[in-house]
Image (cartoon, rainbow, N blue to C red):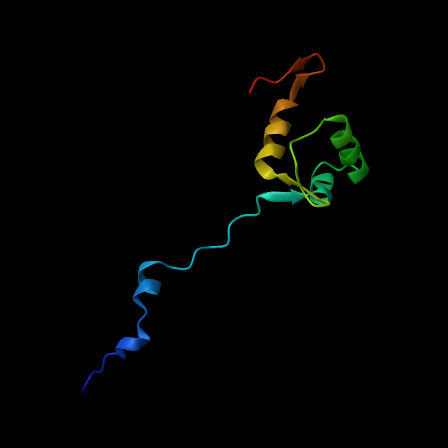
Length: 89
């Protein structure tokens, strides 16, 4: 029995060495995503932006988005242990 090897052009050395990167986790939340995450109205987030409250956000044209790391940092800053004391982080 004669064994044959695949044609040289059929093997892509770059594909063997560097597999396709996986799709990165979503690192940006839309206003609707964040409102849903916090169970609040998008109007509340809009008001907070006008008042300078809430997490840092990105504004590209008319689109507002929130980086996930800024949302998590804000959530950590507003944690409370009791009604009179914030949590230490």
